[in-house]
Length: 128
Image 1 (cartoon, rainbow, N blue to C red):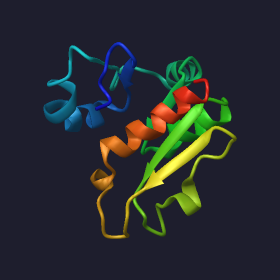
Image 2 (image 1 turned 180 degrees about the vertical axis):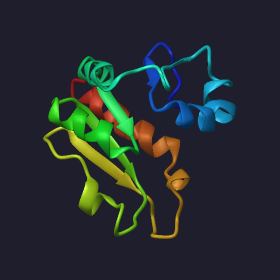
Image 3 (image 1 turned 120 degrees about the horizontal axis):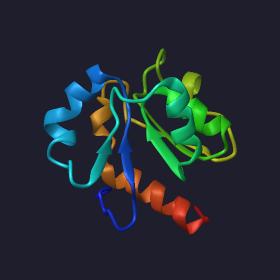
Image 4 (image 1 turned 180 degrees about the horizontal axis):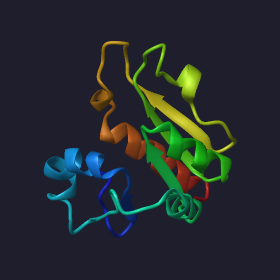
């Protein structure tokens, strides 16, 4: 749902190790639609990339907090678990939002792409 190249320029970031875990299901099958920068950016380069973005969707709090602090649209994806949930780690800022899983036992993958897409489209309607 999210990979409409006419509407989105999707850049995947993360460590080399994270890139390896995403390779089979995301990076290789969608190589013609997304840009893979996993393992290729320094922290400074990641911050600059986020700062030039219209929005960021992430489950990693580092990039989320960077995006929120830079004042860009930020969507955090969280498991509804006390120690790692949004009540503790959600990004802060006027353009920061989050989606959490429906229960403490639900995996992060239970957040639907449709739910994420609806949130991103609401950004566009509100002058992304």
